[in-house]
Length: 301
Length: 118
Image (cartoon, rainbow over the protein chains, first blue to last red):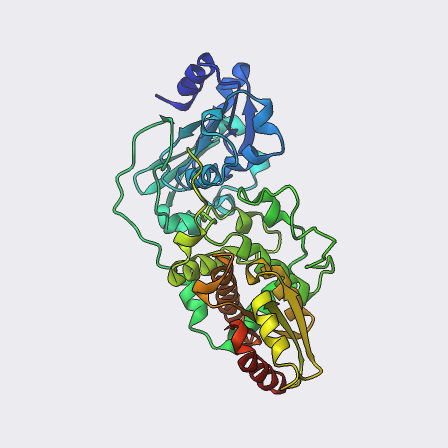
């Protein structure tokens, strides 16, 4: 069954709204009601982690039943949110999509040309084996997989959703991969001074737009410590020292929670390597053996 | 010599109090008393570091915390912070975690003297 058919069936079963993707080239999130069901699509440009919307203030309470489209990596967010009792399981219907990886759109735009030159519905994109086939204006382009894939997809552990109610398409057979923290180890191998030089260069760029925090599906506290004025742990000043504190605290708050969806890195306007910090914390928490200790207490689920 | 901020849990604070007549603390040392070390937030330690102070967290031994998890939490936070500081190229030794019972006040005071003189 394809996505639209599944969605139609779900609407019949009483789902009020489905959070999904729309568009072919200009992929945007959509909160589809029953009359907009045809707009739902899924293609290799659907990068966004839609589970972020589930933790919008009061959203889950207002709607009876919400459908949400998730890829493999996004589905881990749902597990984590359920662990933290962010919402109750019977409120949401998880539409899982096995995903061959999403791509960096900038890399294909270079070759295809400016996106304004074609209409959205003339654009087609799909995986064919290890190649990405793009059809625009009657022309077709082919790209090798390892060239255009996002970094996070190259080391993806879960192409298949780990939690779902309905599955769209077939499960992907892939040899089991294990996170090796390659990028983190690369930084660790540098000397202390080199590391400091690397990081001040990055942190100095930070403009403190808070986009990394806002886009994070797991940063949903109503009162955020980074905004608190009394006591003011991090000042608003955009300075190197405050920036370091901001990023350390942000990474620490995701200790053992970050699922590695890479959204923070994607939205960063100055391209800070934020997932590097997140992965470092994940690695250390694993290494120190605190992951069991940090696990939320299960409350009769 | 830099400023040193010491977060002491109740037990360690009493210990430090008991030896206050025996051994004097350096002027740069500021003792902050907290009910339990588990309550010392990561952010507070980072803030102290930003204000160019060195930080010591002194609390009960791991299995001796009256709040069960306080010491472990503090240990976890400090250890994680130290590793993160190292990762971004800062001096991890600016943060220390000490396990101090009420009867080990002398040990803490001696350590603080040494630490402040560093």
